[in-house]
Image 1 (cartoon, rainbow, N blue to C red):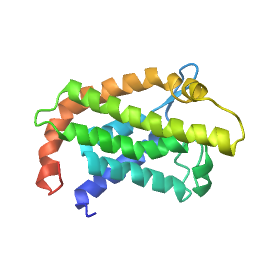
Image 2 (cartoon, helix red, strand yellow):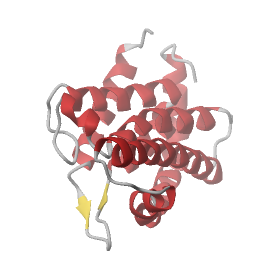
Image 3 (cartoon, one colour):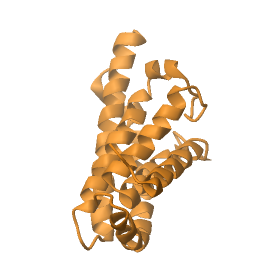
Image 4 (spheres, one colour):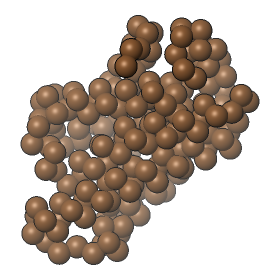
Amino acid sequence: MRFPVRTMTLSALFAVLTAVGAFIRIPFPPVPITLQTLFVFLSGTLLGSRAGALAQALYLGMGLVGLPVFSGGGGPQYILHPTFGYLLGFIAGAWVIGFISERSEKPSFLLYLAACLAGTVVIYAAGGFVLFLNLNYLAGKEATLGQVLEYGVIPFIAGDILKMAGTAALASRVGARLRPAVRDEGGRR
């Protein structure tokens, strides 16, 4: 896949923003909220499917080569971490968000909100699946699907709803200005 320089630059910027978002924590019981998913949502809505997924793949790559960009560190051993599936879900989630966002010539708050909701479902599905496998087969702890939802999904829903709304509000104002620039550079939008 070939990407224009501007697309690669924006994707790299969003990869770095996602890394920074891993360390910005908002205390929220029972689980603190990080801003990683906010930047996943923004990369999909503002950059589109391909560039948004590229941004998240770059983020994942940075962490796997050893940069401490994940909230729990980094390195190739992170593949065995219980939350690794959520990181994989960031790539697919950004792609889904971008794909839905690109379908409309006149995007709106509701379109971006729906796109972020669909992307969140993808992130939760990938993360929950890997968490289930990790707990049951690597950690040797018996965990039910209900327990995975209880600890790996439900505590994050409220924070992600706020981030989806914020992303939809911002993207509905900025996205229309960014779309022509992305089209003009030869990218598929």
